[in-house]
Image (tube, helix red, strand yellow):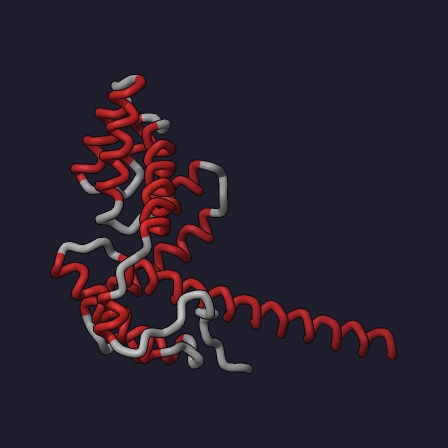
Length: 201
């Protein structure tokens, strides 16, 4: 089985922890992130109250969304901007996962995401969880994950947007997807071998 390493070519590893933590995002990337969060906020505002209660939201964000549902025109636009700002302080992945459930996507896939979220939370609380990750995905870049963990803790202490926190999830998700792809490839190879042996018999 080949080593599994996340494809991080578009996000190269920093030379040092301080450089990774200090590197400011560009104005264009901040704008794209803000627009994406506002779009996610609009999806939340469109939900019914019953649906909204099933989404993992902090109380401040839940209240802001409920307020936006009662606004119109310019007041609604300003409220959506405010919702986008609130969402910069949290990880949108669990929210997106619940929206996918509402859209009819696989509950099993959402459950996988929740497991990765718990693994990420455990990693932040205890560095020894790195060992669990190494056993699960032998090809994981543990040094990079340790760097992300330290930076995520710094972000949390400083009250900064959770950039490294989100990146941890993306790395874990990529490792899981690669493992699933290799498992499927191995299964397909076995099926082909069995078909060939049956054809010869």
